[in-house]
Amino acid sequence: MVRLDNLTVSYRRHPALHHVSGQFARGSLTAVVGPNGSGKSTLLKSTMGLLRCGPGQIHVAAPRERIAYLPQLTEIDRTFPMAVRDCVSLGGWPRQGAWGGVDEAALRRVDEALEAVGLAGFATRTIGSLSSGQLQRVMFARLLVQDAELILLDEPFTAMDSKTTATLLALVQRWHAEGRTVIAVLHDDAQVRAFFPQTMLLARECIAWGPTSQVLTEPLLSKARNMAEAWDEQAEICTVDQPAPARNTLEAAV
Ligand SMILES: Nc1ncnc2c1ncn2[C@@H]1O[C@H](COP(=O)(O)OP(=O)(O)OP(=O)(O)O)[C@@H](O)[C@H]1O
View (cartoon, rainbow, N blue to C red):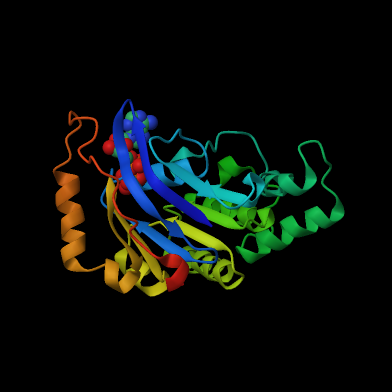
């Protein structure tokens, strides 16, 4: 579904991610983990086409309108005066088109999505009046309406209480069971072990990528921590001369 070929992504010529190769198989459920600043959000933004890549490339085998992206909650402008129902119905724009009306079937889908995330009755509230956990539920409802093939989640459970986390994790499991491809940036190793069959471990480069039990090992986690701590903002543009070999064979593994 997503193939990375020697992918490098830089900010002001400093690579946040470099020489990463491998693939996220169609229908796979993968956690992307690594220390702060290891390139996890950069990977999702690049996959969404929000950042320029190079050298290397990302190939996504899904049309843009079938890709859903949930940024970190801190990147969402909740001061925008928008009702919950309108926010969720935005997930339907690929189906309705930018100028298409929201018909009864679309409204029903929005109400069903709100019910699925435990927010029935919140449709007319403004998004600015919601708690962080409620807003995250709204964003998941929007993903439900979007009906995407590829779902990219950036720290979707951060600062959520256990009930909200359980509700949203159940949705992720449902998407996986439906054959959608889900890639989620996470920081909770226990959660990753319990719910995510595949893991990619980053520290600007790919340290390991494959079955979670083989990736979340102390030696590999320690290697990632050491590499992140050793990173220097003033470092030369790239310290890797040769493309790294592909880190996983998910097509076969999943
Ligand atoms: N817009 C930007 N301009 C310049 N540098 C950036 C920008 N965004 C990210 N970076 C740098 O790129 C590196 C990777 O950032 P990224 O946000 O991808 O890390 P992350 O693994 O998602 O971190 P965290 O766990 O803290 O969210 C960091 O060193 C960061 O400072």
